[in-house]
Length: 252
Ligand SMILES: [Zn+2]
Image 1 (cartoon, rainbow, N blue to C red):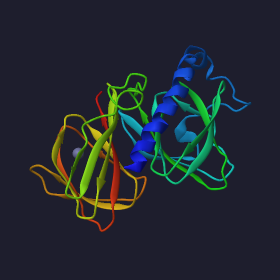
Image 2: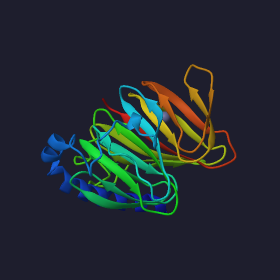
Image 3: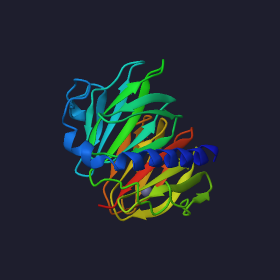
Image 4: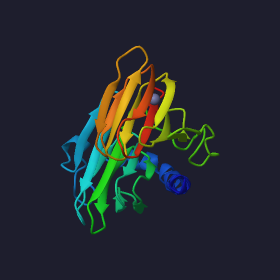
């Protein structure tokens, strides 16, 4: 529960940054192809710090790993994206017009506005380890239906061995956190749209789609599983450790 409260604070702080950045978007978008400290912005695929986990017409997901005191290239982020921190992260995000410091504890997430190229500079003595989800249709964090700068989402559920709550929702996506204890079961529920599941720790899950055989999902921390919608399913933690999960549902 403590980390969930902290998460809300982080998102609000980010949104303040976003609002400032948003006002400059026109200027930045038209000149983002220009050099940044002499370096030419490149596609994320071309950056050796970016390892593709999943790419389809809806989302691009990368594991981003940057050695201590190293940096990525200026990477072109065309669309809004979510950054999930694995381990404690201390880094700078530098665009042509803006530089800001970011600190994230393990399991925290932030929303970044797309539309320009950004370089991540790891300012700590430890490796930087993130998962980035770039949403093709955008996220539009400035207009939350709940969470972020709006009132907290109220659709939390809990039961035997599970908790589930929406962290934020816009008209583009709904982002939730699910925690399953060992043997915990997220009861049968349905998704109208496609969604993706991001494992925050190593885990073994059993995914029982209604009318089909149960599927075993073995995921390492940072790995993802795509679920094409619509789908009705039950998710069970078949391992002996806690299974913390982020799910992102895509509305477009
Ligand atoms: Zn589900």
